[in-house]
Length: 89
Image 1 (spheres, rainbow, N blue to C red):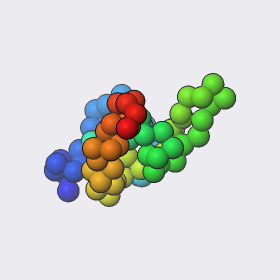
Image 2: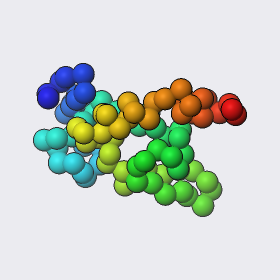
Image 3: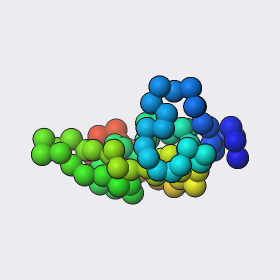
Image 4: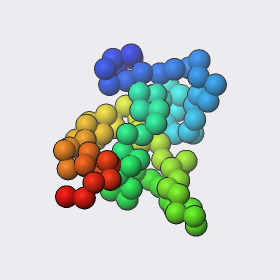
């Protein structure tokens, strides 16, 4: 799957790998910044909230696993995009 539309690995990045999971051989950089972050608690990932209310995702490795592409694409629905934009339905 190397360098396909679903997988990209940038070993030249100064932060590579930015998470300890998955291992470097399967690390996907395609979603360097998770496109589901703005979904808050509906993102489907592993996260916690700082006491200030900031969502913290440092323990989430899902965007960097090769199989997460389909999950991201399935969650990018019109309803969720409206939610991400902050507009109420």
